[in-house]
Amino acid sequence: MAVGSEMVMVDQVPFAPEITVTKPLSLLGYGKSALLSTHQSLTFFDPLSLLHSCCSCDVGVTDIEIHFLQIKYNAIGVYMEKEIIQHLADWKGKKGSELAEDDVFFDAVVSASVEKYLRIVVIKEIKGSQYGVQLESAVRDRLAAIDKYEEEEEEALEKVTEFFQKKYFKKDSLITFHFPAASHTAEISFVTEGKEAAKVKVENPNVAEMIQKWYLGGTRSASPTTVKSLADNLGTMLAQ
View 1 (cartoon, rainbow, N blue to C red):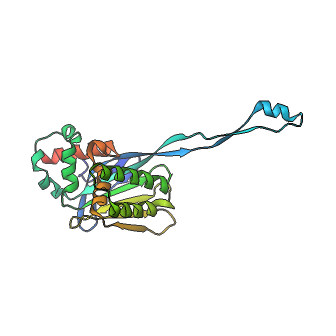
View 2 (cartoon, one colour):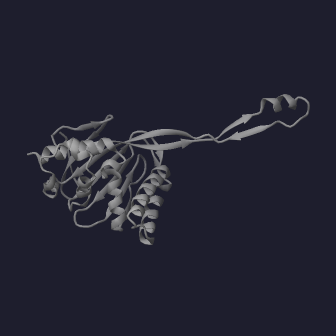
């Protein structure tokens, strides 16, 4: 179980069993998330036109845009106060396999007023703009689905997208999301080799909540392996 004393390895990325942000937080879930990146544009020469070029004809060139999807993985560690169990009493006795499929349970995890901290380590490099666009799309769609995507949410989300826009996620770069217990906000940080740490604060509570749900949203999470791990560990704690 993740709350032991040994380092937890996710695809050779180590996660400490406990960290301190404003207070000690335990590693209660871990896994990987997949991001899609695209490579494109190939140029083809028309063979027939090349043949005609010997007779002083123009050479034909065909530009074809082809998109290749590549999966880029990140390793994820989810840290929380153990006191989150006090907010999940309605699920006492449920197995991890049941909890993993229960979106109401994960809504309760997200809304629980305990400190949470997501530590995300880049395994395969990707452009920050690609990460930002996928985060923006997921958060916007979730807010629009419950009719909470207004001008304030749009502005707050644009600020997050711009934060990632010109960054490059090298291998072992670190993204963190800190969700304080006392406020419905989020602080995002990015650290990579050779650069100073960059931070941005999300003041809009609706956007901050949906960023949490991007990773901790049950069956709609960006990381099913993280959700399963979190469900298993919380299920074990609820059984005690």
